[in-house]
Image (cartoon, rainbow, N blue to C red; front, side, top):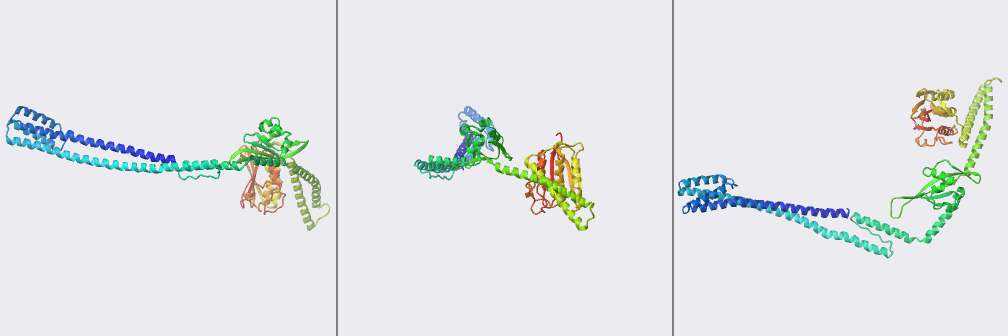
Length: 573
């Protein structure tokens, strides 16, 4: 609990009790005063009136006129001061007996008057006793509550008196001792307070200060300069370009490789903001465009009349200061990794694949044509074994032709030489052309293809017809390959926001979710399945669709079948 809270609670409670004590004392004093006033104004006056009437009665025989007048005067006052039970009847009897006495004075009537006066006095004396008892009870209650609350106030004040000075003085003394230790360069000194949160916060702040002083004491300027020199030497001898920016985008570091590819001098760039330098430097301007969202594609930079390729990597720098817990951002490092040798090898590989695929396509087509001629039996009849052999040659030839076609498409994708003829295309025609291409393959497994069009005839897509049909062919061929015999493949075409969605659903074994991200990578094939493809079809399909500003994906689970889909923009949307 905080010290401020403890003080507020203790002093506040003491204050409330003192106020309550004052209120109770005032209430009981007023009550005692009221009870006393009632005795004086009511009962005491009645006794005085009765006493004066007795004196007047004694003087009637000697001075009758004055005595009668005094009796009647005090009797009238008594009639207005009736406070006790039975006093009214006694006063009425007194007036009646006095009137009869005046008409015919005698001893008997005088005796009745005296008895009435004694009764009035007796009633008021009893009233005084009763009200005195009430006043005594009130005084006792007042004494009880005042003593009780006074005792509680005393205990609270006693506790505060003995605990509060120690609670405040002890941490201050300990802190004073620790400060003296720090002043004597004993930076290992730490304080640990128990109790209030304020002193705990003070202890934490003091310990953080001591840690930082210890850290600064243990480090020297020369050591820091040597470490800085080592790091600069290491960075300058890296083959990757390195540019360091602080949290305000001021350039504080650049190595020789980065200076070489930017054609800048260190004195032209150090201490300036990246935006200032970017005004006259295309490379820095290009880097700033992608500084918050680095691109995956390599950056092409021409240096020494040669194309160089670099992968950009943005590394944020966050530190946790001594004694603190939260990370603080202090800048970032731009790393340009030179991948030109790998890119050249990739180009060589792509050209080799394109050349080989193109060269293989012609002889493979000639082999297939020869097989067709033999199948027509224009050069003589074939026996059963020869027909089986020709069938096997034809299937292998078709497979080789498909592979070379995929390799050619891949070389176009990798070289960026895909030529798209984007035009208004009918989704139904795309699906029908694709189904026609795979009809024979589906018939071999007794598989039916069921198309469903959930759109209007006036809905068209903006696409390259041949490339899109190729993707649908790939989806349908894979679906047929992985479906069981006598199953149905569902092809659905439907509107999806401002796009049209093509999907192919089969009822095969399905694909585990952990492979969904890799399924569209080049050469990837799901482990455990029959490996009878190149692993290029889906990768090429992904590139064809994305080049047309579309999206491609898969929904699948084990033993639940698979649904491959792509979306293309609606024409004119």
